[in-house]
Image (cartoon, rainbow, N blue to C red; front, side):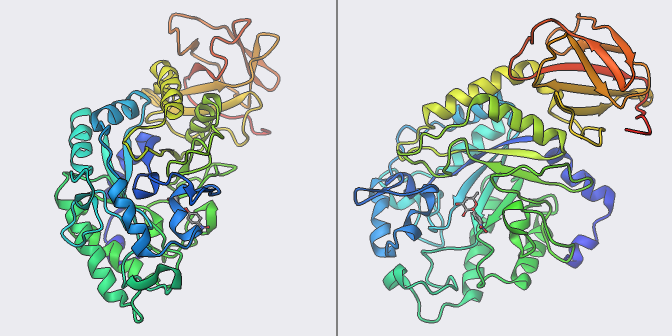
Length: 441
Ligand code: JFZ
C-alpha cells in the first residue's frame, strides 16, 4: 500500500472505518442515459446489465451520445429516495456519478457529456446531497475508471468511433478524472466513500491506482475508498490479493462469502433482479425474504450489503424495488438492533436454524441475536456450542417475553413459541454473562 496508508495507525484506521462497520446496509443507485433504452436496442432485448448496453451493442460514441436528448428525469424526487433508503435501514447511498459510458450526473466543468446537456439540465447530485444531509444518510459516489466516451481512455475499441483518439493519453485521462473527483469532493459536502470500478482494464495500472488512492487521502484523510481503485481485486469474489494493493475494503459482487472473513472489511453489492441499470425486460425479482436473509447472512459474517436500485429515465425507482424496500423497512422497524453496529457470529459453523450476530455489552457480557430462518417444529431451539448459563432470552419483537433457557447436551435450548412470530426471520435476544464455547464444538 501507499506510504500514506502505512502512516495511519490502527486506531486511526479503526476510527475512519467505524461508520462503515456499523452501517451494515447501503443503497446502490445505477442511473444514467442507459436507463433511456432500458435494456433494448433497435428492437432487440439485451441480456442482463442494461448499463453495459453501449459496449454489448457496440454503439459508436456519436450515436450513443444522442441518448442525452431523451434523458429527462422530471419525476426525480431525491428526498423520497433518501427516505426510502433510510426507512429500510440503509445508512449510506452510493450513486453512479459516472458509469462506464462516461456520462456525468452533475454539471462538470470538464465535459459536456453531462446532465447539463440534457433537457433536464439540473444537477442530479445536489438534491441528493441535500436530502442525505437532512436525513443523516452518508452520500457516496461510484465513479468508473473505465470511460468509453473519453478520447484519452487507454483502451482502443474501434466500435467507439470518431471520438477514439489514435494515441490515447492516460496521463491526460487521469488528470481529467482527478479534476472531476475534485468537483465531486468539494461541491457536495462530506463524501463517505469513493467506489471505483472498471479498474480491470490494462490501461489502468497498479501505479496509477496507488497514486490515485494516496492523492485522494492526502486531501480527504477520512475518505473510504473501495479496492477497485487498484489492481488487487480477485475476480467477482472481490477480496484484495495482498496488502501491496491500495483500497480499504473488498467488493464481492453478486455473491456472499461462504464464511466470515475475520479482520477484513468487505461489502457485497447485489441487484434485486438481474441488472444494475434499469431494464424494462428484467422481472427476475428476488423475494423480500431472500433480500432480508441476505442482509442477515452478510451481517453475521461481518460484511455490508450494498443493495441496488436502477431508476428509470423519468426518475422513478421501479415499483418492484420500492415494494421490496418497504418489506425490508417493516422487518427493520423491529429488528434493526440485530443488524446495525453488530459484530459477527461467534460460532465456528453456521447454525442449522439460521444466523447469529452479536454485540458486546458492559461488564464482559455478550448479547447474541439469533436470527431464526427455520423455526423448530417442537418449539425447542438448540443453540449448539454454548457452555454457560444465559442471563435471559426474549423475542426482539417483544422484550417482555421471557423464554425459558435450559442446558442441553450440545449447548443450550430455548423454549420458543409454537409458531414463528416472523416467517422471514424471528430474532431471539440471548444475553450471556460471558461468552464461552464448548471445546469440542
Ligand atoms: C461492475 C460494472 O461493470 C457493472 O456495470 C456494475 O456497476 C457493477 C457494480 O460493477 O461489474 C463488474 C465488474 C467486474 C467484472 C464483472 C462485472 N469482472 O471483472 O468480471
